[in-house]
Image (cartoon, rainbow, N blue to C red):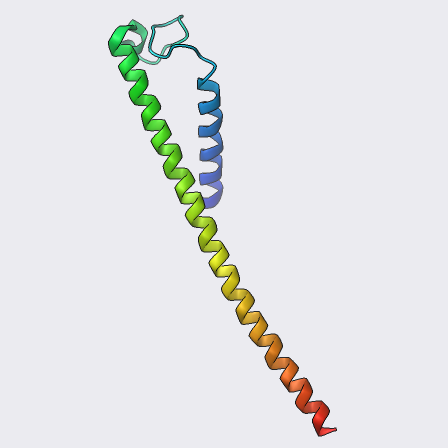
Length: 106
């Protein structure tokens, strides 16, 4: 369940990030490509641009955290699966030894 939520959140963030590059000058005021992101951003000017820059930085940091989480998760899954492969290989070897013993007893 947590994996699904993380994947959907990352996909949503990636879509919003790619959409934001098409918007123009963020924080330049309502109707000027900055959109209506609150009273500071609607007013435009230096404060609007600063607010937009802070929001963009925040979302880039969140995206980086999500990607780091996914990367760590994949490494963990690989380690778990490699351990499972080793366990199963030991079980195969054990059973092959049993078969060899049974053949020798014949």
